[in-house]
Length: 322
Image 1 (tube, rainbow, N blue to C red):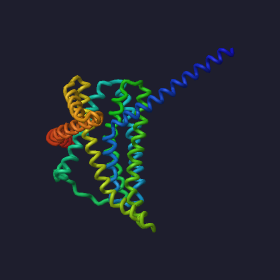
Image 2: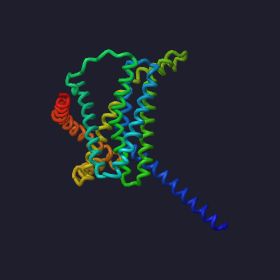
Image 3: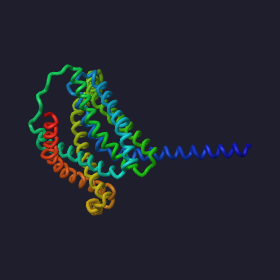
Image 4: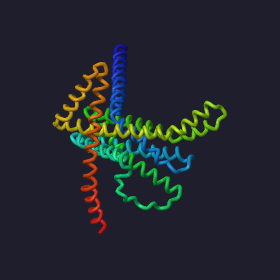
């Protein structure tokens, strides 16, 4: 009886160790998968503060909280179950969908590059006349717009994550997707909340009695616009690098190995110029090439959307409205 109890305890201990190891593995996989979505996360953190511009300061954090809540719904209620179903019934679709999202990232990055050259170039001068809104209506409109944009970015984050764990058991896929979805949302919107309140903190410090603290407050107020511009630039580059890299790697997985091999060889050749910094230079060269490809692909996708897809959608809506 005693030996049987000891054997049972040994079995429970072994199961507990396996479970703990599995949780650790899921954490590691989630961290790796999440890091691949860096470009989207940085760009999201750079873009989201614009949704509170022009609204009262006391509503900034509540608005960010509403957007974060909508983002969690997007990831955990809509996208996570959809991703698991897709992984279960049609895993072959993951790579093409990921590449489609990569093409979207390239197009968005292309827009940002062109905006640096010709601001507002992709608006085509067709901005609709702004309708007068109450403060509450404006806030709701901003929140809804942010959540719609977040759905696209969240879908790409979840697709990148799913591609990284597609060979794992379904339960681990679910855990990793949930961890990445929750972690990315807290990271992005926590950072956004800090960014949008930095001005207020700077003003408060600038009004304090100590000279050094006042100077720090003024520096914070004047430095935030520069910080946001730098963050936006980093997000643009990261978006192009990630988007271009997704497309190249997707082609490799579909059997077209040439582009990825050529980029790898180019990275190695560049890194060999300075062997002491081989790892960094190799990554830098490959990321740079992927970003340049992202700009080119983004331009092509932009032309396709403007001259083919948009007219087709407009025609379909016109026929539907008749």
